[in-house]
Structure formats: structure tokens, C-alpha cells
Image (cartoon, rainbow, N blue to C red; front, side, top):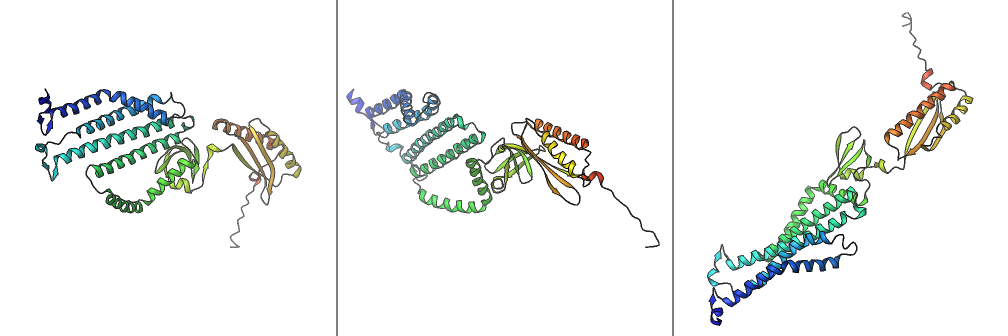
Length: 366
């Protein structure tokens, strides 16, 4: 039996093959238990609060990739004990089969490790999305964006590590070349980069959010989506416009949703034939009209007078809690009551007593 175990097959004794095979089989059976144990340790290290709330999602995301890492690591360590058979060491396009297998093994290990980190980033996103202050749509878009950003960054890092450890490529030269190419691309895509930077400003500064009613330039509408390059707005005419993020940041933007009150501004142009006593009766009467529960504060005064009219300015403010329908109904009621006052005090507006005189010259004078 001893002689049988010492017999060599493909430059390695049978005893060593059994040792390697046993190690791989043991790893295959215990990888699940080891990965669960390590995942629980990692969860205790990185968790602070709500340990039971996020434990199961963490285990579901981490255990699978962690099993592959453990299995590949133990298998590579065990197989490394074997001497690569000379009969299998042949050239494949100027590369030996041994180096090709080593490159594939290193690439596989790097891929599973990068996949493990990507799952960790995904778990962080799940935690942030379930936090109470992260229910805003803009915050959710920001979380998704950074998840995608770090995923791409990890994939690029993994690609560079494969070039370094599997193909022994000097990545310093590659990074230098990429920096030059990146600078050229940045110059050609300057406007797109400006919009990308503006999107970060919007995400962090939050001058507006998805669902807000905003007025920008000559457009008024509801923000439906904030993208990395542009913001999409549904206007009050129900059209759909796309505004570059740079313009949303650089121009003056009125966030109507953040207003604390709605304002109504009315200009009454009273005819010059109206007496001062009539005006002095009209102004207090309008003030009484504005003494309504829905109106939070108001101002009525004779703001100007001139050659064509006396100007009475009426300003009043209502709560933003009102719906648009309620607000318009209130404005209509106030306008009707002001018209009734004008009729009651026999006051005409400036345009009501305008006379147009047409004079025609005789033909003899022409």
C-alpha cells in the first residue's frame, strides 16, 4: 500500500493527488459553513444599528460570492502543491500551458473577489434606501447613481488587476495612456462634463427635487426626472421639455413648491371722475372683503395717481396647503365682491369713461 501511494503519475505521487483531492472535497463541503461564519463576523464588524433588520439581506448578498472566494482559494492553494507535469507543459502561441493555467486561475480569483465587493456596495445601497430620510426620489436616484459608479470603478480595477497579475502587463504605461486619452475626451465632451458636474450640484445642494413645481426661464412645470445630463419637466401646458442641468444650476430658478404662501396681486385703475370720499369709502370696504379665514394677510392702499387713473393696489396671501382649485375659487369670490363694491359706491374704472372723438376736416381746408 505504501509503495502504491508513492507511485508517481504525471510527475506527482498518488499520495499527493489524494491529499489535494481531499482538500478540495473538504472545501466543497465546508465552504457553506465557513462563508456563513465569516459573513456573520463581517456583519458584526460593519453594522452599528438595526442589526437584525439588515442581517438577512447582508447574508443573502455576501454568502454566495464568499463561497466562491473560499473554494477557489483553497483549491488553488492545494493544487499549488502539485508539480506541473512536464508532458503537459507545451507552448500555446509563445506562452506555456502552465502560465496560461496560472493566468486563468488568477483571473478567476480576481473576478470572484471583485464580485464580492460589488455585492457589498449593493448591500450599502439597500441600507441607505431603507433609512427613513432616504425616501426622497432624488436621494434614491443618487444612491442608484453611486451604486452604478462604484460598480463600474470596481470592474475597471478588476480588469487592471487581471492585466497585472494574469498577463504581467505594465499597467503604469496603460494608466499614463488612459490619462492622455481621458484629457482629450474631456476637452471634446466639455459640455457633457459640465452637465454631469451640475447634476452633482443638484443632487447634493437640492435646489429642487423630483415632483417639485418649478419655474425656470420662461417655463413652469413639474420635475419628473433628474438625470445625469438633463432635467425633464412636465409644463403646465402638459408638454415635456428637457433642460440641461447646467442651465438649471446657472439660471435663476423659482421653486414654487417651496413657497410658504400664494400671492394675489390686483391693480384697480379707478377713473379720475371718482371723488376722494368715494375712494376713502372703497378702500376700507375692500379690506373688509379680505377678512376671510383663507387669507392669511393682506394690503390695500392707493398706490398711484396720474393723468389717466387712480391706482389701488390689492395684495393678499393664502396658504400653500390649498389646492389650485380652492385657490382659484377664492380669487373668483374676492373679485366678485370687489365688483359688487364698485357698483355699490357707483365707482367706474378708468376704461369705462374713455371717450373717443373723431374729427373730420372739410375738403376745402385740405
